[in-house]
Picture 1 (cartoon, helix red, strand yellow):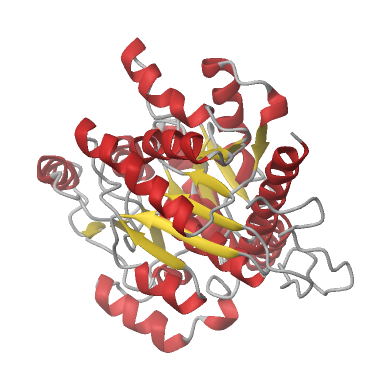
Picture 2 (cartoon, rainbow, N blue to C red):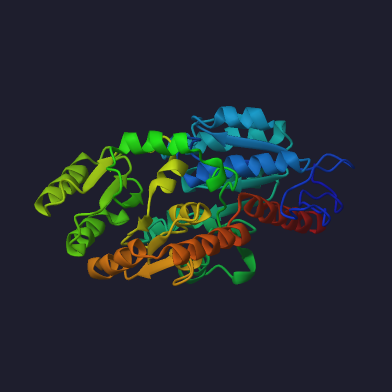
Length: 409
């Protein structure tokens, strides 16, 4: 059943100390929301955001269902009282996608789902048709540019703009959705990704955690750390940073490229070769992954995102600022919305190692009062614009909007 016009899952207690935090309703049970994505692995903003929103739905009095192929985050759903439907949603095989239509329709009907929210293309095709058959509203979140180099690719991507509303994770993505797919601004809602301020709070990162991470990175005492977190893939700009450090011409620094190659062994080998050729064998090292990313940020004197292609949003810049770290991002994409040049960090032209070297040098040479001023501005910037609770509340508000529109139809 569709909820009536009085049913809402938006937090509505203006007296609360944090107006963005969703409060449970007691008058009646809220609607059931089905989120659909390929899998629920530990890594990735899509997976993290799905669980965060599911928790917000439950906290607001609704029921949360997630359909995916499973993964490390499934137990998190059980802990928050959400239901997981294990389906082969990660498959791009047309026959599997076709069968997923019936499977999802069964989930929609058995859980009496009121709204379907798709977060990725392959599962979105199945979810769109299942929602149509079941007669429930369908909406999407557009998480990236997805690449649109051919008519076939555009057709495949187009399912992500078939929802009654399209959430864009940045203004950059909103403009992409409008200009490439012709979606009217009235159907687009910009909701920036949010970070967990409890997890990314310098007061909650103990000295022991920082010391443990320092040992894992094999850092030298007294030398500033330049950190670039991100999977080892060419567009993340590791090669640009290596060249920038070579041009920086300082031996009193150390740099960690933090991220897995995810099977890109040839690219990792290229990075290692470039480090040696640049004479930076004692300066730059690759660490496969962070078992404590917050502590890794706290170790750093500057956090870099050197992406050569625009980030759809870019969590690294926001997470680092939440911990008061100076940041340097590429001057395009989502970084333009998350970094305030001269206030919370720097933006440099993409693929420009000279400009990046200058910014790194400025960040490392910050006087203590200026560094503290920047840290306070960065933390306040994130608390105002990029919290998990705000992201969830704004998403729930879009659910309300779509449900109210459907009830009035």
